[in-house]
Length: 93
Image 1: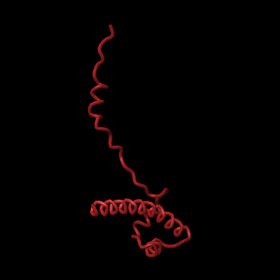
Image 2: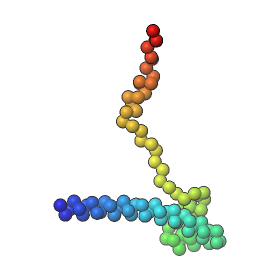
Image 3: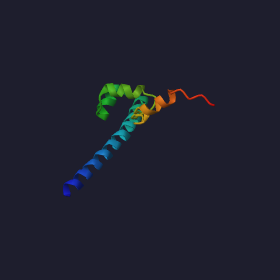
Image 4: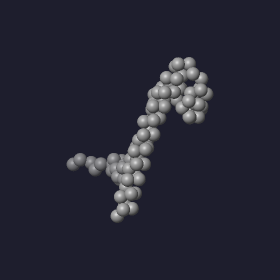
């Protein structure tokens, strides 16, 4: 029982950390853009924030904060719906 609770808490902490990372990336984007606007070099920004200078360049060039994008997975019924749509309808009497 204790291991179940511990694993549940560990999973919850992992999801909270993942959310914090997403927020942090938007925060990093804002910090990078602000430092670049102040005239700091990309290398200086990378050193200050502890991130790769290529990441700094990518964040400077981005028009909006980075976000997670995921394609729609579809439905388990999708293979069944397509033949029903394409099947010929019987003539009306």
